[in-house]
Length: 185
Image 1 (cartoon, rainbow, N blue to C red):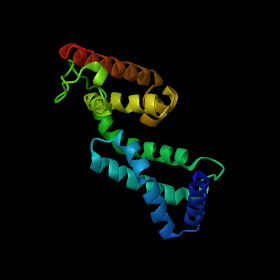
Image 2: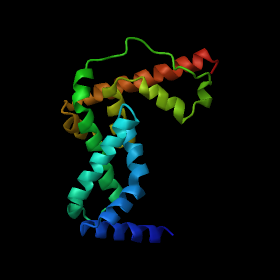
Image 3: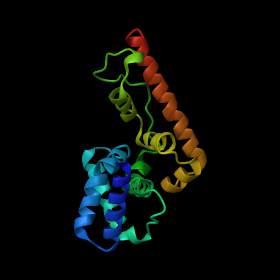
Image 4: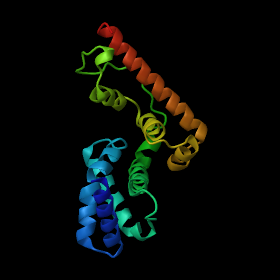
């Protein structure tokens, strides 16, 4: 079955390279969820994420002829989506580079012990991080970019990337520890 899926992807890409709008729509529909999942990690809200996804697909279709079919399409798409979402946020992030949380904030609506935290609880905690820290955490820990790559993407020194990542991890640890203490974990 996976072989059929790979063949379908290959056909879609091939037809997109020929300019087929129908196949562009099919490719969009096939990878929309994947792209949206990535974009949401770098956006303030769903509307911003959707705009970034749509912008990314425009870039994909404009550059599809440069895509090397010998490489994994999802990886190529992921790079475009991440860069597009970050580009959209770059202006906002420059204003927030110096924003820090003064103290640990309570995670609203959660009353679960540490061992029962789920993905949604962790995502809520990540939303409490300043935008620059959340973005760098996602780029480094989830998407696997190096500090040098992050520095280039965000137009900051690599040392700043390391510092923001360290601060993000510390704030997340504090939030998790606070949750555990408050609810007997």
